[in-house]
Length: 219
Length: 212
Image 1 (tube, chains in turn green, brown):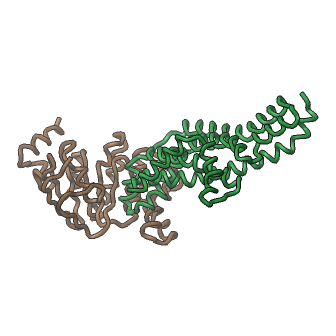
Image 2 (cartoon, chains in turn orange, blue):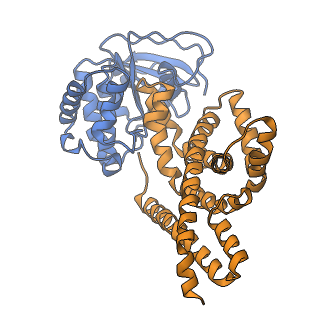
Image 3 (cartoon, each protein chain N blue to C red):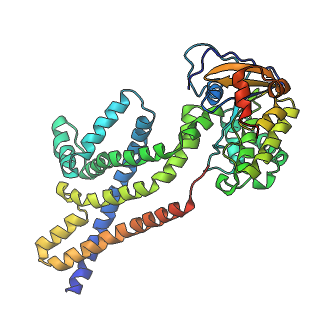
């Protein structure tokens, strides 16, 4: 094991980790917004929009991220839309994640007792107020474990970014292996950095799930 | 359950109790009045908002007792926060729960939750209060504390429409009893008359179930 080499390339990994995290978080934030909007549309059974959302979810969930990224990165410029690799990465991740987030929030919404909604209506609240103050907050609480599982899934999916020449962790490791043939060291660093990013999210998820199990519900 | 050709009038300050076998349409009637259940034909006229109290309390679990009470006055009626809070505390005091203002629903007993649900409806100053079997989910020892609150409201001449299985309570609280079966009004009489001298066979049979 060449520790000197590992120490030398550490800054490259750090830079790559920052990029991975940044694009990952951007994608996750947009995915979350898209997921909330889609989930509410599905839950409220909004005509027309609901069908559109369902089509989107099927496309998003049944195509690989790599294909989605190629479509955005190589396909869109043909239609006159040229985006930077970074924006393409975030957009691809958001496109993939939106459908997973939508499912997480939809099941959260459906877990809220229907009578809670009626209770809010009977207090004179409208649909939007009911969603915002009564159903929404309760749905968010029950969606957190699924949400965090999606965050982990999406952060791992960022490893595909290297395919559109974003210098993320995966790209950096492959690049270094090609340059120096230090395969073991490069891959070990790759694993360490991914763990460094993902373990805190995983542990948070486990802690939240434990808490929710013991918290018990009741109106 | 369907309601059929049902006509009912509740006067201001009157307490009408609806009784009848399970599944006769009592709860459906309340839900219709409150707009939770669509009606195919006919009309419902109220002088103002109706306040509803559910069998299963339906407090909002993510909000404290005080916030449960303040949500609708602030967001729906757009009232001033200070005034709403003051009224909420007064109401809580009246039902003996002022110390629970900052508790969350899951920290309360069933009886306490239901008392909160009642004052949460009251704070909106509804023209009529609808009670949907508000003691049916309670442990026996908690039924009393909730019924006392309802009785107290009756004494204050609140307009109320009460669905209940507690016959003793129905008798005590009602100005008028409406007996419903299979979606129709079978008998309608003053409280005493209904319990002492029911006219229809169906009402007699129904009341017999409660005599041991």
